[in-house]
Image (cartoon, rainbow, N blue to C red; front, side):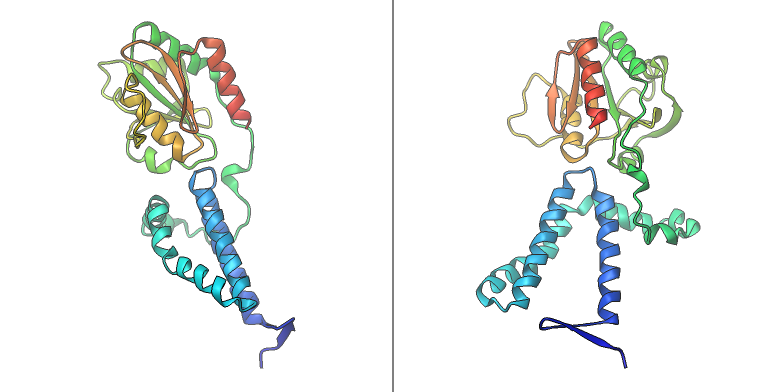
Length: 267
């Protein structure tokens, strides 16, 4: 017979402990998937509402429990809508050969977050800044994404894998107007150019300034949902901009761009 313990008016057994442990592991792994994106706030909000609902049910507060219960009932649909991108990425990974071949079961039960093990981000800022202002002089359009904590693998897979050292000449060659990879975004991670010609989501803001082009729309669209930095060089004016958290800092000079890059990489 499985032993049961009683805490106040609740029974608690070994199977309950196992159940709680498995749910905790599942929620933590989901949290690691969305950490660094705008979805993490929604995830925390839904988790808090569910915890409150459990407490309300335990104390048999029928009216409040009924109201929260209605919200919980439609919560599954809300989760599918809000986390559709994360769910898609998870299902693609589970069904991929990478997951089957690796069989990295230890990582599933690991509570260490390797993707954010270090709070410092390595970047050769000089290479990025020199490339941006060299392209600015020739009015060569460019969109450079600097990855931080967010997993940009979904967007990396939309482009061409490069995986090269980060240099100003390499960036300029990619965005040269006759280059086959000039259209789209370059994604930089851990001081390497990971991919080029990447397709990014565009912002749906209705009041988006009309003088900004599609590169700026894509920069805002990506940084609204991730913690990445987006640097844009305008093809029309040559102006250099940096976008973070959906906000565009435009008409930057070298010093201002360097300051913004270093400031945001420290956060």
